[in-house]
Length: 147
Ligand SMILES: [Zn+2]
Image 1 (cartoon, protein in one colour):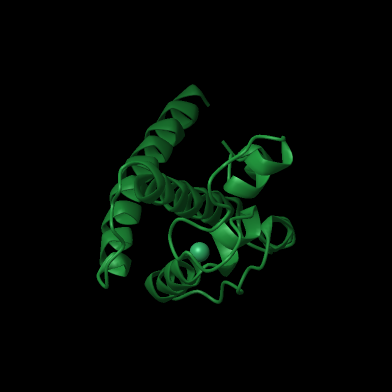
Image 2 (image 1 turned 135 degrees about the vertical axis):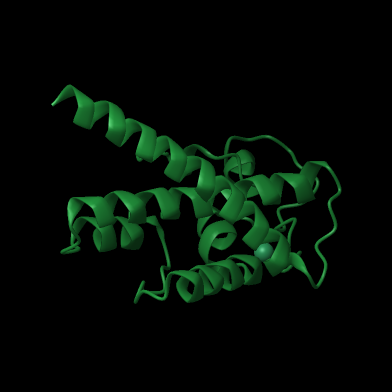
């Protein structure tokens, strides 16, 4: 799961560099920037808002990420205990997953982004996080019962 490869995601810029003609390179969410990976997950106003929300929920001093490498070095370079580290990874991957899912909803299912999108994101992230945390707890139980 942690090996989630962002580079492979078919954002519009990546599609166009493979020589495929697409009608627009603009980000489906904001229609303001070319849809590259960093735009989708870090620079788009939608992404900026969601990372901000995550920082508020977690009330932790998570830095403002500008790219995938910065997330990696934050996680790898942290002095977190392994438990907290695991949680931080789950949260980051969940946030990215929700962003991508939401982006696909906008791009393919004509979901309209409206003023309430931070609330919708919050619901999605929290729901997904509950599932992930459940899984994690279940895994911990299995591995501790083995010991
Ligand atoms: Zn955008």
